[in-house]
Length: 254
Ligand SMILES: Nc1ncnc2c1ncn2[C@@H]1O[C@H](COP(=O)(O)OP(=O)(O)O)[C@@H](O)[C@H]1O
Ligand SMILES: [Mg+2]
Image 1 (cartoon, rainbow, N blue to C red):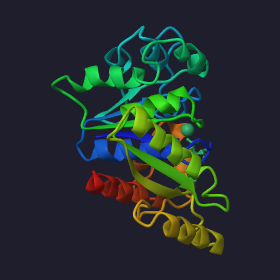
Image 2: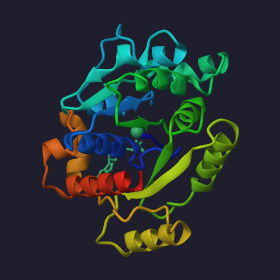
Image 3: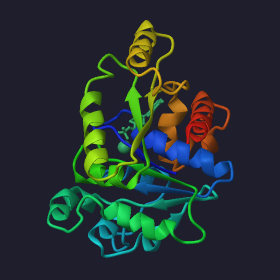
Image 4: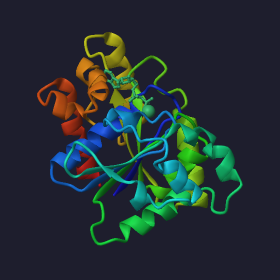
C-alpha cells in the first residue's frame, strides 16, 4: 500500500506522522519505504540521515537522473528504508513543469521499484506544505492519502482545498486514489478547545477521521533531534502509544 501524507499547511504533523507510522510498521516486521519529497528534508534528518551534497536524492529521481533504488538508504530502524530529500527540491516545481509526465514522475520511479521481487509492503510519501507539483506527484503515486490535522481552532481551514486537489487528481490522473483518513494531531487533551475541535472534525468527517488522536507529547518533538522515531527514543510514552494505535487502524483500513 502506498500512502501520501499530505496537507498544504505546515507544522500540522505530516513528517511526524510519516516517520512514526513507517517506523512502527517496520518494527512490526513489514518492509517499509519512506520517501521524503519536502525540500525541508525533515523526514530525512529526523531519521538521522544527512546526505553528502554529492549523493543523489529524490531531486535527481524526479528529474530522471537517478533511480529510486539508487538513492534508497537503510535507516536505524531495521526494515525501514529512506529515499532522502535535499534542499535542491525547492527548485523542483519549476524544473518539473518543463518535463514530460511532470505529474507522474514519482509514480513512474516508484513503480519500477515495486515491480522488484523484494518489494516494499508499505510506502509513505512525506509531502511539502503546498499543493504544487511535488504534492501532486505524491497524489498520483499514492493509493491513499493520510491527512494530519492539527487539533487547533482553524483545524478545518484549508481542508476543502486539499480535498478538491485530491478529487482533481483522481479525475484526471489517478482514478483509484482514496482519502485513507484524517488524523488529529498535537491534541492538548486537557483543554476544552481540543475536545471541541475533535468533535467538529468528527462531525464533518465521521467515517474518515481515525479513532486514534495523537496527543501533544514532548517526546514526539524531541525524537527527530536524536535521529530516531519516537518508538526507539521512548517506547512507552504517549506519542509511541498513539502512533502504534494509529498504525493498527491504518492497516485495518487498508
Ligand atoms: N504530537 C506532537 N506533540 C508534540 N510535538 C509535535 C507533535 N507532532 C509534531 N510535533 C512537532 O511539531 C512540529 C511540526 O510537526 P511536523 O511533523 O514537522 O509537521 P509538518 O511536517 O506538517 O510540517 C515539529 O517540530 C514536530 O516535532
Ligand atoms: Mg514536514
